[in-house]
Length: 517
Image (cartoon, rainbow, N blue to C red; front, side, top):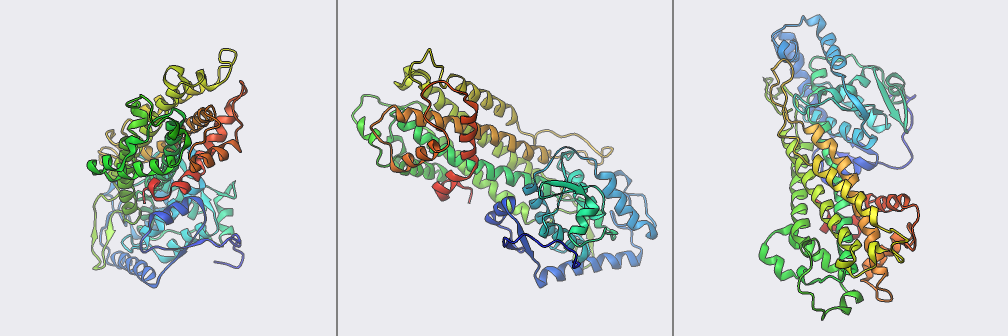
């Protein structure tokens, strides 16, 4: 990097080894800066792969993507003096994305995952190309990548082309929230536009890094929703004077489902010491509705699924998904590692989980606002009739739950042929992963409404107190949103509660019981 390069921010970024990316590092990269450490082995592998490509060019061998056209044009041989133009043309022609730009955190993770793949040494790119990507990451210069335009096979071609075009000085970048030209962004990183070497354009475009980054972003958002949903579910149990007997460890040990066991334990901890619970131990209610009683079974299944998805995505984050691949013996093999079916399946499973979390919470909200079921004032407000209280808040929750049901339809069962039928089956992983953000936001709003409703319900039981931990949650909520004593403009309350859900506060509170590990 030149001396003119902009200095990184003063906060020390986390130093990342590319040998094995784990979930904590991937989570961190979505939120904060990272500094990439290239080991001697990383550098050696990259140089070895680039040297293998150089030998193939010198021999005049015909190799797909190196000196041929792409897709259906693979049989078109490209003269040696036009190889660099071929790679540049590939990037520019494939930068055909559309839609809203990906968030900086997602782009940061895309850069990290692309670098991690390239340093494995099987893509045949030069070290200077890898280091240019690292310089963008280091200086927080994030390519402007439209979110739509990939079908999740042959790699995330369009979005990765937008990322790669920046290295050529084409397109735009975002720096500190401000959009500027790619050429200016390169100057800030101390870089000049690259002339791509043989295969480099294809290596940069091939891969599942965008789909994987979006899916990981969805997973992290859904972890926050999950943790808050456990807290909201526990609050609702107390507000509705439900029983904690269904969370008895003996019940769940017999089921042998680890997520269910963990969720039941978390609910027991959340409710332990509640004076509200103690006040109705001898009531004549035999069983609670399923949305209270079956939380371990439903939320535990969601947790098991999240943990399974995390394994798939960690593998993908550490994978080589380029094509063709250059091996140490100099051989080049064409395959299909760019096909993102594992990511598509993972994203579809997350969609099912987050849809169910919100659906269960909405049923608890419905119980809370119904005086026949709750024994509480209608719609959780005094002078109901004059005041409508939580009446339409529950309708909002119902609307969002229904929207999530539609969005939960599996994307991976769809396919559409592309590239003149050469690429005739695709995964739709990028769309599958991208829609998780909308679903997580919908679910976070539903959980936020439940937190408000359940806290309101508990306050109708005063002077009785809930458990110490649930009272702390209520206090935190009340620091943002006052008790609903009479009708007022409700939307800001819901937004504030949603922000608590998305903040990660509940995940920090519940620890390992609420994360994918």
